[in-house]
Structure formats: structure tokens, C-alpha cells
Picture 1 (tube, rainbow, N blue to C red):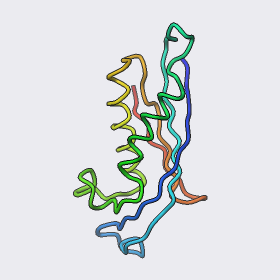
Picture 2: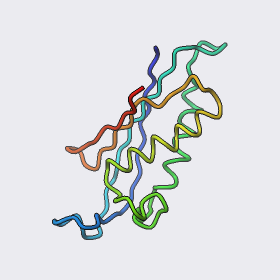
Picture 3: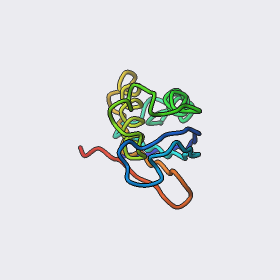
Length: 126
């Protein structure tokens, strides 16, 4: 099994509905994101997937979040835009894109940092 990891970031604002503390107020973060994909087979070039292609596909997902008020996005109208739910969103959106090019490739985990000292990692069990 091979794993490839890439990093990116985005800025956005959110407010946590029904949260009993300060985070229920509108505030922003500069989120950092790490995505790991895995695959068992190498293509004819000896790669699971080209890093350039993987970065391009992830950046398309991140563009939907960047400089947005996350609560207003369809994905977060009922689910709170927590770091946990953002990680799930990134994972699902990227997986859908990758599945269309190679069923061998799977998003194995997504880590989202909302600050330098706080992060969440989401992974799908096989």
C-alpha cells in the first residue's frame, strides 16, 4: 500500500449554532489541511497518482470553502461547520473526484487545523 500526503490552507468564517461559548459568534480561522490518499497499484509511470493532479483536485474542493462564511454553504446549512464536519466534507468531495479517475485511489485521512494548537483528523475505515 502506498500513501501520498499533500498540504494546503484556506481562510473562512463560521459560527457554531447552539454552541454554549464564544464560538457561537461569527469568527474566522486560517485553516490548514493535510490530505492523505492511498492506493495499492502504481500506474504506468510508477505513481499512485500525480501530485500535480492531486493538488489540482484538492484545490478545487478548497476553493468552495476559501473566503466564505461556511454557515451559508449548502453542506453546512444543517450541519455545524466544525473542523470535524469540514474534514468530512473535504474527504467526501475529494473522494468523489478521485473515484472518477481511478477506483484504486482512496482518501485515507484528512486533517484540519483551525489553529496552530488544535486539529482534527477524519478517516474512513475500510
